[in-house]
Image (cartoon, rainbow, N blue to C red; front, top):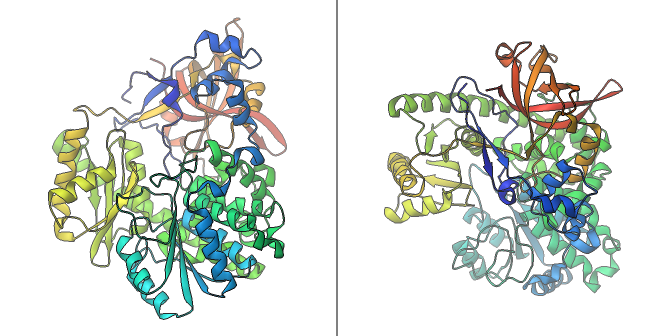
Length: 627
């Protein structure tokens, strides 16, 4: 293995390093020379320790890393209160206008179309508005475009259908629409009003919609800017339910909107928006709702064991075991799988059904599509890495931009592949397949490489080079004529040279702190629960243990696919601490670690509950021989 020197990074930026949206995998790679650089957060100052003597050193370091400096900030982080920490929806500048228009449509019996994006965020947001509008007596249909045959955002085919239905007078977008200037104009000309609810970046000239609810809109007064699309839709639902006209409906009873928080939580986690501020409060309370969910489809989905579930996880999952991690790795990927492999409406139907038989059928279909998704990712990763290996041989290094695609690569999963490649190699990745005659792809960026700016630079350099493109600084999508693929690759790599350093640093594994052996104890494990829910902006803490010695090593699991270690380390008082370690999926690395070998381990601390017993263990995230 190529070892990297450990580096320190500022504590204030430490928790902001984004997670991958892909399934979990590990940074330990002994053969490819692409090992991650362990970045240990800077130590907190002594005065911070003196300010809060009631907390342990480890807990204080975690709080400091998250930018929490006062007792009030710490209290808000640990004990978020829904009534205090969730903002009034009417703080949105256009919210009163939106509520009046929607209530007008309800009262006039006008048909409302909720037009949602096809990912988990858009699906969950569509469920929120559909559920709310139905309970308030609206005539409402939901339209979710096909990822493959229509694409992202408002589409002319759908517009033609809406215009044809003379009852439709109002369109409400969810998680899309903010860049659809032409499409909104078409709807306006046909006499339909458009309310855009979205959270994506607003272009300099936004669509001429009836109203726009987007926390990123210029001049917007809403105080929290990083809501996901479903979070924005939830705000509209809350505003509708607060209106005095809602009092005539049972749905408007005080607190009823909280039952929608299950959808907000799933979307917030799935869309990887920062789990800070209002988002943290949404997920905290959303998990409470999920644990006692009234949604038949969601209960059924929790009861199904995924094909690659770890053996120690029971199914149905006990309510008390449902965490943000459960959502991120067992629920959100399944909801997303339907649009990636078939139709997003399958997940939507699962989440709104009240029929148990239908829920079982739909959940099994969803799980089958999720298995297909996994297989497609495995196949594309294998092919992409083979092509990349050839480029590395030719160039003598990893290219500044990873760029790969084939006609038969499933367009619905290329974003996940791009995420994995960027995570592994520390380079921007642009991966594509073919759909509707064009190459359609997804991209992932790194620090210093804004993918939308990169695509915009290429589009401006040569008119007609790209079709549609957009996204966020770190993730985006694009379409391109097949004839322009090589030109696009060349342009991206030229752009990378202009914005990235000559020697691009290796991928970073952010580490909260180095711990002493005696700090690995039940008290720390119990205190870590208070840091949940975890996600972008509040990653699950990873610690570093140095100079441990392997005392036992074996393969475990149904297929002996996991690495089980026992290590010992000497405490400050001279006593010896023994710790159990598990490395899921790492059994193939056994040959590198023998009894007596010194190791450094980056790990997460957790309680292992199995067959009625509860043991403290560390979950290996990366491991290397002690230098």
